[in-house]
Amino acid sequence: MSNSNDGNTTVAQLKKEVYKFSQERDWLKYHNPKDLAMSISLEVAELLEHFQWLKDEEIECVLSNPKDFNEIKSELADVINYALAFSNRLDIDVSGTLLEKISEN
View 1 (cartoon, rainbow, N blue to C red):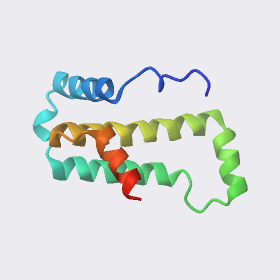
View 2 (view 1 turned 180 degrees about the vertical axis):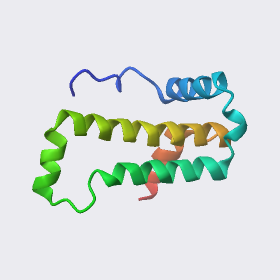
View 3 (view 1 turned 120 degrees about the vertical axis):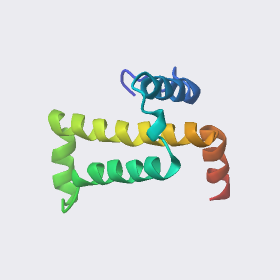
């Protein structure tokens, strides 16, 4: 991994930043479970658009293009942002829930 913050940033820190960002913009009033779940779905669809109808070799070309790759990273960030906002709204322990799901599977 090159230049990664993943090893140094906790989920709790990310959740706090997402909360703070939304609070500063007075967006928390819009953060109900339905709308946050819809927003996650919409952002996932935007992520999928980058890959729709592409063959494997075409995907490799997209991923090696810095502009396309940055757009993909940005869409993933939007998905994660809404997922963390959803977990904040419902007070879900993301780490614990994910580990439980991995264990179930």
